[in-house]
Image 1 (tube, helix red, strand yellow):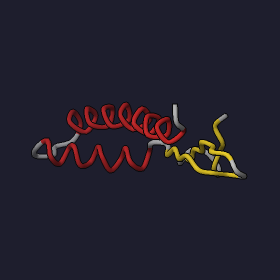
Image 2 (spheres, rainbow, N blue to C red):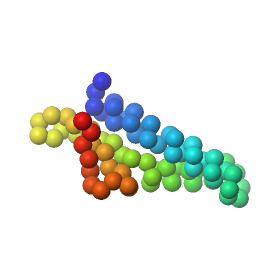
Image 3 (cartoon, helix red, strand yellow):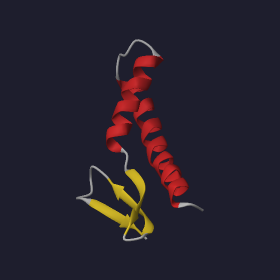
Length: 78
């Protein structure tokens, strides 16, 4: 599997659970008027909280990197 495809899949697998958790918490505990606002809040919060994966050429080979709010710096995934 290509590293770019892995990066897209990892981004989705990192974003989706956080989105669902925030969506259901926002739906249950906030008084937002409709599901569009709830979805927007969940999207923004998930975008900030989810890890970001990126495939890049580094020293002649393609590598997978991750940056996250809770990690210091950019880490390489082996």
